Length: 549
Image (tube, rainbow, N blue to C red; front, top):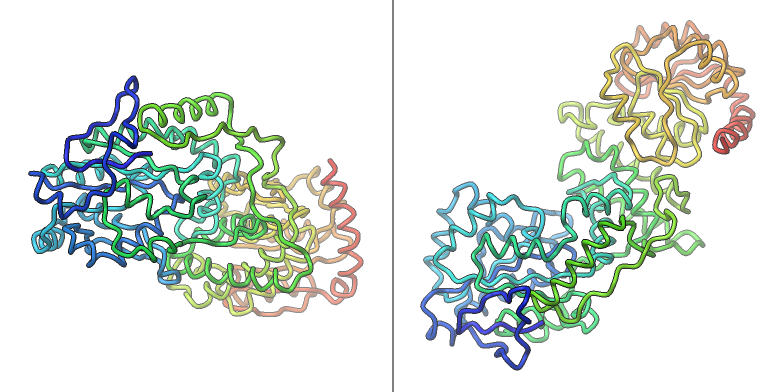
């Protein structure tokens, strides 16, 4: 890694030409001097990547905006956004600035640029490295066509980036990722996100950059001088040495149980609005800390023993890393990828505390849905928004064997817990895409989708459900069939039925009827209540046999 001299035209070395050494470049020349020695202003463009210290760099630039302005450095205030009201230290940098340009909204940007005398413009948006479309990048390049351009990329080893990016994707209310770690790695490789060199070549071409510099995040982090290193390669003055040495951001605990629990819950949280999803993330983190502080177990961290990539994708990464060293001067070079053995991050893994985190998370979701109300759509329009939805959540949590007739939400919730037998029977209004979505979910307990016939009825007779949940369009004939085969009458939950329909079902099965909310009911016979413990015990044994098969 080398510093860039702002006082001559510097081009990215070709693949056959070695990068300049430290003795061939001048370090830390201030932009005040640059004003007097260059004709064109300079755009310093920090393109990321994500999860490589971008927030610390951006928070430093934000804090030192006025001090840098005194040196002729314009760090735009317009378009520098903090979109998470529950974590104000987090920022996407100048992403909103880029979006404004792409939308043709240049008025406020022009005003600030003209009011800020500068020889250097410093922009930082970590998502530019892989996540933004070329149309946005081209709009940014066109706006700064009168500037010389220097691209600065802070990159981390693929294994560390995949781990950190995956954790963030699962936990963040912005993304709510439901993929497993192996699936995530495979998708990133297929999308070209691990071929760092190819991406840098592409960005250099779009911006017609005079130079493209790479910083090794792992090495800078080990030295604890990321911001100082970044300022050095950019040639920026250090206006606040103490802050530059100490600023950190997004330093969070990465419990395996929290990551996996949130991944499972994301099958439901993806229906929340953005602010509600961000609030849920904050609440779940806090609740997890409480659970961990009140348990005697030491929670495991999410740590990648090896990267689960195919041989072809692994070869692409290794070749790209060599190009980073030769073509872009990466120092030191990235080490080789370690091979993953087995599948330690399967969606069926059974990790301590995960089921407890899922149960607590569902309770939090019910509170958010109730607060949203039915008019808000999403979860606000489901039975989770009922005032006593927690009763149903508890029933599903405690039931090893459940049947769901036309009720895909309750089936998904049941399958979030480990070692469950979850059966879904389509209702009269069930669409094919609902069934496909259920089958595609990566949850620890597989959802068995069946049509009622003699064969499936005999299975249900052998594995008596503890709970039957009936949704919109549920066939009461199917309910009658299942109930008739049961040794003990299961608890029946109705999620989309009015008072008259609930009363009819209660009369049909001689059940007590309890209203939990608008169109949400729980029905249970006295015999079922008395024999629930015995039934549950039998079903645990039955479920164990199913797991073995």
